[in-house]
Length: 142
Image (cartoon, rainbow, N blue to C red; front, side, top):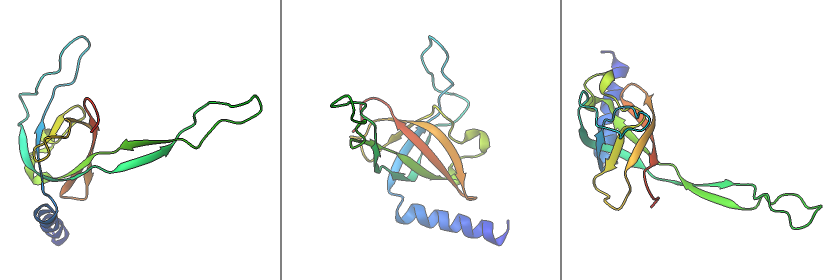
């Protein structure tokens, strides 16, 4: 293991100890099939660990498509506010690449029970030691 690899692992551990205050549970799920309920993937372990959870609001301009008169253009002034949840997880929690989060897996934020369950949309490596996991809401949005 080279110097940079060791340094990256140390920084990742410090990140979890200082701002990683969100405990989560990752439940691996099998790929959904038509007309069937999703089931838990028994070949991958359920992981409970600490990560850095982000839940920022984003504003997007949308076109209403409503015209007040025949010659006016569409109205672009309306804003849609959405949430873009993400969680950063240290790779040390996953024994091998097959255990890493996949699209469709479920994540529950244990320290914030008022939040809905989340589904993994995408999982990308962030450097050598961390995973950047993009999420989407399941059910109503908080």
